[in-house]
Image (cartoon, rainbow, N blue to C red; front, side, top):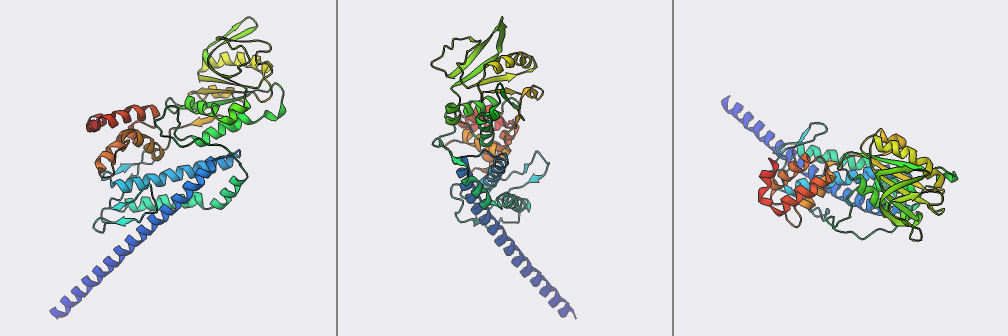
Length: 397
């Protein structure tokens, strides 16, 4: 009787062991297949995004679709980057409070996402299920936004190709990281002729907190060849210097682009014929409620002067100032953390291979999260970490 019980017990244990091995092996294969699928999808999405950036997309719905593709691409890249660095820390999503523990045993080449995914058997799936769940979540998200890529590609074929500058290092002064969709929305506003209305001056407000690079975004839009060719005169103004002097309005200009055949003394005096019947773009930075009242007094003068298609852009951190606009404002928020991380990482770890130092990467992410998407903070703090890598613990505290 005892022998029969012992035999049944051993048989049950062996059966359970075999089931565990097969189930565990099946999970490994499933996870590896998902990662391979994710790599293939990222390659496809990246190529479509790059092609779209070389087209002038005027439809706002298509631009929104492009924005979702860009966000999805960075989520996927961030996940692969996390896996590749083999981080040990559990990261907390600040938006929903969920903790995600990245899988530790995969090695993926971000530069070549089709490289074979290598899985270390001793670590896979034994640590926790959080990493596997995150792979599944990101994969489902990418599948959702890229399910109709053929339709998106067909829409792009109807968009005019535009010249794009050669890729440059993000450390070069004057270069902008991200914000492609927002820039195109600004350019679409600027190039719209207003439907032929005489004396109608389009006003666009760019709203965002300090540090989201409102001014940088507008400057890059103004520097676009399409905008330069459309507006013979582009004036960037210091709004605090607006003043009325009898029948003439006087501005303190920060920078004037174009209008070489016109007399642009500083301060600029606006009176009858100031723009010589030329289409103009005027930019007012850092508007507050006081400056808004001053601009409301200036706009009637500009409307008398403006040629069809002339435009005004204002930047502000106060949503109430945006009511002066004639179109919906563009709201700038901090970049999603996956996208911001690559900006910070380039500044903090430039030229260094940090994949073999997961603790360093984890500390870098903890610091980056505290910067709340600040580009200025990424440059300053990232520069310190780049020049003094041994002081990272002190910077974190």
